[in-house]
Length: 198
Image 1 (cartoon, rainbow, N blue to C red):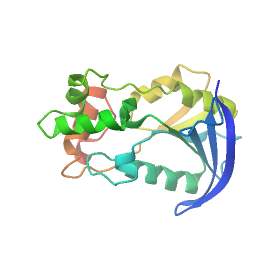
Image 2: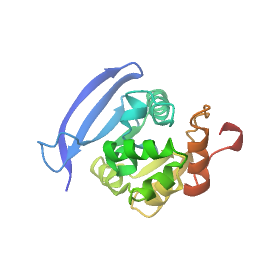
Image 3: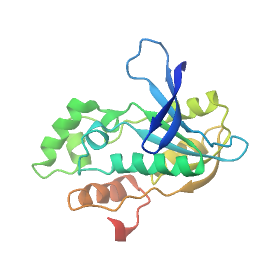
Protein backbone atom coordinates (compact mmCIF):
# COMPACT_ATOMS: atom_id res chain seq x y z
CA UNK A 1 0.00 0.00 0.00
CA UNK A 2 1.30 3.43 -0.89
CA UNK A 3 1.35 6.22 1.69
CA UNK A 4 2.49 9.81 2.01
CA UNK A 5 6.28 9.94 2.34
CA UNK A 6 6.92 13.71 2.16
CA UNK A 7 5.22 16.96 1.26
CA UNK A 8 6.10 20.61 0.81
CA UNK A 9 4.98 23.80 -0.92
CA UNK A 10 6.79 24.33 -4.23
CA UNK A 11 6.70 27.68 -6.07
CA UNK A 12 6.61 27.27 -9.87
CA UNK A 13 6.15 29.54 -12.88
CA UNK A 14 2.48 28.49 -12.81
CA UNK A 15 2.00 29.28 -9.11
CA UNK A 16 2.68 27.62 -5.77
CA UNK A 17 1.52 24.04 -5.30
CA UNK A 18 1.49 21.56 -2.42
CA UNK A 19 3.52 18.59 -3.67
CA UNK A 20 3.06 15.25 -1.96
CA UNK A 21 5.17 12.14 -2.66
CA UNK A 22 3.46 8.73 -2.44
CA UNK A 23 5.19 5.35 -2.39
CA UNK A 24 5.28 2.11 -0.47
CA UNK A 25 8.71 2.94 0.91
CA UNK A 26 10.46 6.16 1.83
CA UNK A 27 13.61 5.18 -0.10
CA UNK A 28 11.76 5.04 -3.42
CA UNK A 29 13.49 7.55 -5.71
CA UNK A 30 10.57 7.61 -8.13
CA UNK A 31 7.39 8.14 -6.09
CA UNK A 32 4.07 9.11 -7.58
CA UNK A 33 3.18 12.74 -6.86
CA UNK A 34 0.08 14.77 -6.09
CA UNK A 35 0.41 18.42 -7.11
CA UNK A 36 -2.32 20.41 -5.37
CA UNK A 37 -3.24 24.01 -6.12
CA UNK A 38 -3.48 26.33 -3.11
CA UNK A 39 -7.07 27.38 -3.86
CA UNK A 40 -8.51 23.85 -4.15
CA UNK A 41 -11.98 23.53 -2.59
CA UNK A 42 -12.36 19.93 -1.47
CA UNK A 43 -16.04 20.47 -0.62
CA UNK A 44 -16.86 20.71 -4.35
CA UNK A 45 -15.97 18.46 -7.31
CA UNK A 46 -12.17 18.69 -7.60
CA UNK A 47 -10.45 19.25 -10.93
CA UNK A 48 -8.07 16.30 -11.41
CA UNK A 49 -5.52 15.38 -14.07
CA UNK A 50 -3.93 11.92 -14.21
CA UNK A 51 -0.59 12.61 -15.91
CA UNK A 52 1.99 9.97 -16.79
CA UNK A 53 5.65 10.91 -16.73
CA UNK A 54 7.25 11.82 -20.07
CA UNK A 55 10.88 12.88 -19.73
CA UNK A 56 11.27 13.48 -23.47
CA UNK A 57 8.26 15.80 -23.67
CA UNK A 58 8.39 17.50 -20.26
CA UNK A 59 12.13 17.95 -19.75
CA UNK A 60 13.51 18.03 -23.28
CA UNK A 61 10.42 19.51 -25.01
CA UNK A 62 10.18 16.79 -27.67
CA UNK A 63 7.87 17.66 -30.53
CA UNK A 64 6.88 14.01 -30.99
CA UNK A 65 4.17 14.30 -28.31
CA UNK A 66 2.15 16.92 -26.48
CA UNK A 67 2.89 15.65 -22.95
CA UNK A 68 4.94 18.62 -21.77
CA UNK A 69 2.39 21.08 -23.11
CA UNK A 70 -0.42 19.11 -21.48
CA UNK A 71 1.35 19.22 -18.12
CA UNK A 72 1.90 22.97 -18.42
CA UNK A 73 -1.72 23.52 -19.45
CA UNK A 74 -2.96 21.37 -16.54
CA UNK A 75 -0.79 23.25 -14.03
CA UNK A 76 -2.08 26.58 -15.35
CA UNK A 77 -5.68 25.32 -15.23
CA UNK A 78 -5.55 24.03 -11.68
CA UNK A 79 -3.68 27.12 -10.47
CA UNK A 80 -6.54 29.23 -11.83
CA UNK A 81 -9.43 26.90 -10.93
CA UNK A 82 -8.13 24.73 -8.11
CA UNK A 83 -7.38 21.04 -8.42
CA UNK A 84 -4.84 18.23 -8.34
CA UNK A 85 -2.42 16.75 -10.85
CA UNK A 86 -1.60 13.15 -10.02
CA UNK A 87 1.81 12.62 -11.59
CA UNK A 88 2.37 8.93 -12.28
CA UNK A 89 5.82 7.44 -12.87
CA UNK A 90 4.80 5.52 -16.00
CA UNK A 91 7.33 6.69 -18.58
CA UNK A 92 6.55 5.80 -22.17
CA UNK A 93 3.14 4.28 -21.42
CA UNK A 94 4.96 2.37 -18.68
CA UNK A 95 7.62 0.76 -20.88
CA UNK A 96 10.47 2.94 -19.54
CA UNK A 97 12.80 5.40 -21.23
CA UNK A 98 15.15 2.77 -22.73
CA UNK A 99 12.32 0.94 -24.49
CA UNK A 100 10.76 4.27 -25.41
CA UNK A 101 13.95 5.30 -27.25
CA UNK A 102 14.02 1.90 -28.97
CA UNK A 103 10.42 2.53 -30.06
CA UNK A 104 11.39 6.00 -31.30
CA UNK A 105 14.12 4.39 -33.41
CA UNK A 106 11.55 2.09 -35.00
CA UNK A 107 9.28 5.06 -35.63
CA UNK A 108 12.12 6.66 -37.60
CA UNK A 109 11.78 3.64 -39.94
CA UNK A 110 8.09 4.32 -40.52
CA UNK A 111 6.24 2.52 -37.72
CA UNK A 112 3.69 4.38 -35.62
CA UNK A 113 3.88 4.44 -31.81
CA UNK A 114 1.65 1.37 -31.38
CA UNK A 115 3.38 -0.69 -34.08
CA UNK A 116 6.78 0.13 -32.58
CA UNK A 117 5.79 -1.03 -29.09
CA UNK A 118 4.27 -4.24 -30.43
CA UNK A 119 7.33 -5.01 -32.56
CA UNK A 120 9.44 -4.73 -29.39
CA UNK A 121 7.15 -7.32 -27.77
CA UNK A 122 5.64 -4.70 -25.47
CA UNK A 123 2.02 -3.69 -24.84
CA UNK A 124 0.61 -0.79 -26.82
CA UNK A 125 -0.16 0.84 -23.45
CA UNK A 126 0.84 -0.73 -20.14
CA UNK A 127 -0.26 2.08 -17.85
CA UNK A 128 -2.38 1.44 -14.77
CA UNK A 129 -4.41 4.31 -13.36
CA UNK A 130 -5.54 2.34 -10.31
CA UNK A 131 -2.81 4.01 -8.25
CA UNK A 132 -4.31 7.40 -9.14
CA UNK A 133 -7.61 6.24 -7.63
CA UNK A 134 -5.70 5.06 -4.56
CA UNK A 135 -4.13 8.52 -4.19
CA UNK A 136 -7.54 10.20 -4.51
CA UNK A 137 -8.81 7.92 -1.75
CA UNK A 138 -5.84 8.80 0.47
CA UNK A 139 -6.58 12.49 -0.12
CA UNK A 140 -10.28 11.83 0.64
CA UNK A 141 -11.37 13.15 -2.78
CA UNK A 142 -14.75 11.71 -3.68
CA UNK A 143 -16.05 13.81 -6.59
CA UNK A 144 -13.96 15.01 -9.56
CA UNK A 145 -13.88 16.78 -12.89
CA UNK A 146 -11.33 14.80 -14.91
CA UNK A 147 -9.02 16.71 -17.26
CA UNK A 148 -8.44 14.19 -20.05
CA UNK A 149 -9.00 13.16 -23.65
CA UNK A 150 -8.40 9.49 -22.78
CA UNK A 151 -11.50 7.28 -22.39
CA UNK A 152 -9.43 4.68 -20.46
CA UNK A 153 -8.85 7.20 -17.66
CA UNK A 154 -12.57 7.98 -17.62
CA UNK A 155 -13.31 4.25 -17.30
CA UNK A 156 -10.96 3.89 -14.31
CA UNK A 157 -12.89 6.62 -12.48
CA UNK A 158 -16.34 5.33 -13.48
CA UNK A 159 -15.39 1.85 -12.24
CA UNK A 160 -14.07 3.19 -8.92
CA UNK A 161 -15.54 4.63 -5.73
CA UNK A 162 -14.75 8.16 -6.96
CA UNK A 163 -17.64 9.99 -8.64
CA UNK A 164 -17.01 11.48 -12.08
CA UNK A 165 -18.81 14.80 -12.20
CA UNK A 166 -17.55 15.80 -15.66
CA UNK A 167 -14.77 15.42 -18.22
CA UNK A 168 -12.74 18.51 -19.12
CA UNK A 169 -10.94 18.25 -22.51
CA UNK A 170 -7.21 19.04 -22.49
CA UNK A 171 -6.33 19.19 -26.18
CA UNK A 172 -3.08 20.61 -27.53
CA UNK A 173 -2.97 21.50 -31.25
CA UNK A 174 -0.74 19.21 -33.30
CA UNK A 175 2.54 20.32 -34.80
CA UNK A 176 4.01 18.95 -38.04
CA UNK A 177 5.80 16.16 -36.13
CA UNK A 178 3.13 15.18 -33.57
CA UNK A 179 0.27 15.05 -36.08
CA UNK A 180 0.66 11.31 -36.79
CA UNK A 181 1.10 10.48 -33.09
CA UNK A 182 -2.12 12.28 -32.19
CA UNK A 183 -3.95 10.56 -35.06
CA UNK A 184 -2.82 7.18 -33.67
CA UNK A 185 -4.09 8.22 -30.23
CA UNK A 186 -7.46 8.95 -31.78
CA UNK A 187 -7.67 5.96 -34.14
CA UNK A 188 -6.16 3.20 -31.96
CA UNK A 189 -6.83 4.33 -28.40
CA UNK A 190 -10.08 6.23 -29.04
CA UNK A 191 -8.85 9.51 -27.58
CA UNK A 192 -11.49 12.22 -27.74
CA UNK A 193 -9.71 14.62 -30.09
CA UNK A 194 -11.12 17.15 -32.55
CA UNK A 195 -10.13 16.57 -36.18
CA UNK A 196 -9.33 20.23 -36.77
CA UNK A 197 -6.63 20.14 -34.09
CA UNK A 198 -4.67 17.09 -35.21
